[in-house]
Image 1: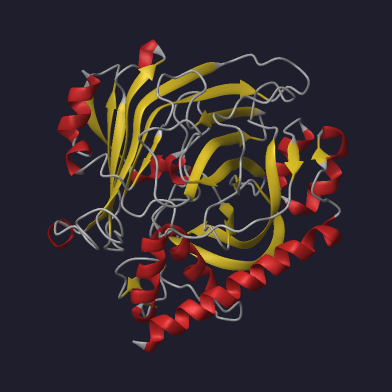
Image 2: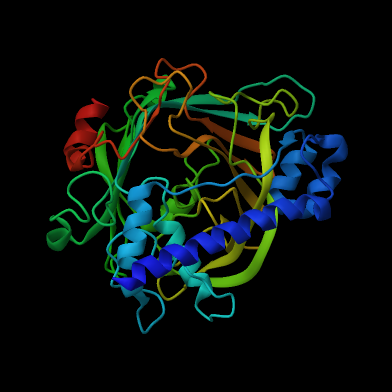
Length: 430
């Protein structure tokens, strides 16, 4: 077929153009490779990061500026994009996705397209970082307050045995490909779970699982096992926008903006060359010594081409969401979120999520099992900062103090559907 070959050529041209854009940007941007950004010179990056990320830098999250370099998709994901994307389109209501099988839905974007924001967000949902399954083992999250120049004073520390996901559609590497036969029966698009909690002791055994359905009118199903009651209970979907306990994370903003897309409106705000951490060097990442251990810092940041989309809840589909809007920044090559800013009901900046990513064939240099035949993306650390209170929760992947060094098991069949059941959740909790 001619279309896939033409698409391959077009994508290659776009990649070359993007690389040239990255190369030219630093001269205009007031930062250059070799610069070190600290609280003292944070003003240099004010226009090159999100408002929330700038606050983090001004309070001590340091950056090393390096030259930009490319990120190439995993070959199976690239092949699926070339094979299937030509048949994908938005539904007449401009919200649902029709004809999707696997790979990226909309590899060719036109900024003048009135639906470009929706297409960018669908691309983000079907991103190349993990198309089939993932299992993040024994990762830890530390809650601390931003405190420039002071030593870290932990508020609490959490360790979770598994943060895992399984996609029923869009599969490219692990059988069944490209879809699990169960999809036609259940309509489940994807499953995720985080359990069991290992620390702190009072939360030991707690966890949750979530089912997301392809049907736009069917809300996410979520169940939680709570250590205090020792039983499973159903969780209202609106609770996914709130943060449990002392953590500043909420499910809708974990891993980037991840709420059910059909329940939100998308507005394209433009594209811009901005800084992002794409080739992090620290493995594992470590708490920042210059902001009270609130974030992870001292890693490499580079200029990237980002799309910016404003996300607001559709009141006719979901009510009670705590965020009035979320500004999502999307890397136009790797399709991850370097940062996400959310605003409270008064329209004031409330939280920012910052992601440190790396790109290599293994999550840590000394990996022995999680080794891949090609380079792929990994998140090494992620911070969720309440900019109004200064409290931050930073999760480390892998954790600096946990026995599991490799942490990331992507598209390896490390979990199957049996992990995402209330029975398994309950058994692990006990």
